[in-house]
Picture 1 (tube, rainbow, N blue to C red):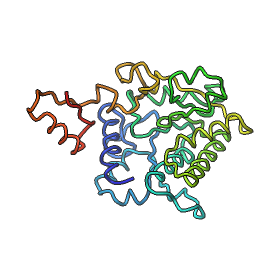
Picture 2: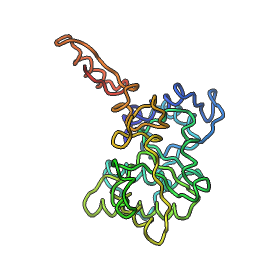
Picture 3: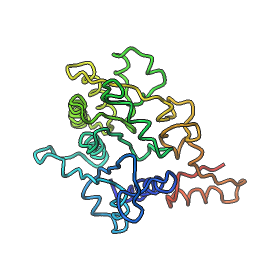
Length: 279
């Protein structure tokens, strides 16, 4: 993406994990033992655009910073424009995880508790009876459909848990990347979830034999499938908290013609916090 995205999403997320969940850095003066590792998958061109202070903040927090250019095959087709390339980088982050058990998170998937990884990791691997990947359904009632119908519908990809040691997982993620490139080349599709649907269906119902499980809507809480989207409701993570969780919202309250709308617009333009709502 851009430096503006790092300033608006990445750095505030790191600071949130430090201050609100008391998760220490991987190195430096604020180093603290952690129950899980954290990796950032990004692009070299973006890292070079950051200030020294910004790169230091990322370097001390993350155990690993992986760069897309280091994993991209030199013979690969030219990358698509930014919007689609961001999704290609996202899928590559899943495929080239440095961890045995991977919890992939978009930056709008916000952990509510410090032990969120301990609650999600048992969804895959031997502890889950050989499950390779756990995802959240995109639609209410999707979990009650027969498998073939269930897999025709999209799943959300903002939070995905993988057994990264499984060869079935590796084969599925290879399908995911190839499906995304194919759909983008054929019709300009820039979303990753249609490709996820194609890959998941082929991997689960075909020769790969991928073992897929649904993540409970009380673990990763999303507006379309969860009764409540709030850290206060016991969720391990919430999706788009600035939009759905009142504990993350900023309100400007005022009567008509007192400048409340102007203040809200200024706060939103400054990007100092979550999007401001006017009451």
